[in-house]
Image (cartoon, rainbow, N blue to C red):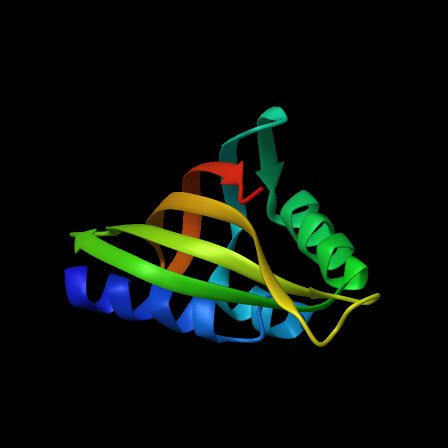
Length: 123
């Protein structure tokens, strides 16, 4: 499953899942749990609250782009290292990094079910 899991996560980051709820639902397990250590503290998200976070971010920016630099997989787990870039509504001509992330995704039933993530701002 390692190659299939890696392909699923790669496809997720290249998809419109961060813009369209229908696409998000194709990739994300209904029992999603995201455990996120960020510069603002520790948060836990479920299927709905993670979509609400994504939706809120997409409304705040002109565009979001995920640049994956590393992706490793073993069995049903995939580790991804990426930079999140954005174009602001105020300055859509300039793309800037806003954060660096490492996420470990667990795949179940062909969907992303569990994520352990850490991030820090690019500033």
